[in-house]
Image 1 (cartoon, rainbow, N blue to C red):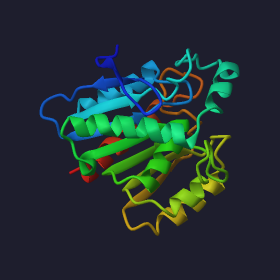
Image 2: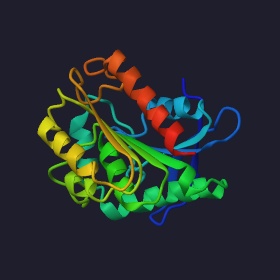
Image 3: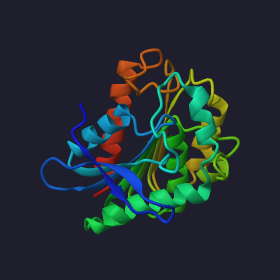
Length: 238
């Protein structure tokens, strides 16, 4: 069960729902969690809750706030894909800015603010790591490495622009993200002026972290990846 609350915040493109998980104990900083393709699902909310337990104010912006249906079943790709293709770089920029502004309004500086994303949110996170001055970023199986999405440059091009400590987590069995692309990204990101790391899981499918998807979830990989994510934030968010 989710322990956070959903509020509504303004953006330059209308109001947007924001799931907010308050930190347990003293506030150490903040983390933006960027949704998977199916919306701010219960899984994404649970990720927020887990991060908040470590002391981070954690928020998940609803990037689908411009349409009536914002959360979809995992087997309803027929409905999801037409919504995804309507997302633009400008819309995502507006939503990220609104979430980060909300965090700043809570008195938390950008250097103590991280970002993590899953699936399409992983692609958004790599973009954010290349375009925003934040404290840390973590990508879970974000695609679009060879060819950009949403009007972004390709992930490989963004890898050459990383300006935030960035961790990428990928599964070798992910049919949508070729291993060769992941290795190219590793090589490119290694030249960034900040720490970067790429981790590959030999038995990982796309969505390996999502325990609401039994056909792709891998408990051991998910636990390792989650621990790496939390350690990355511990190390780089001050």
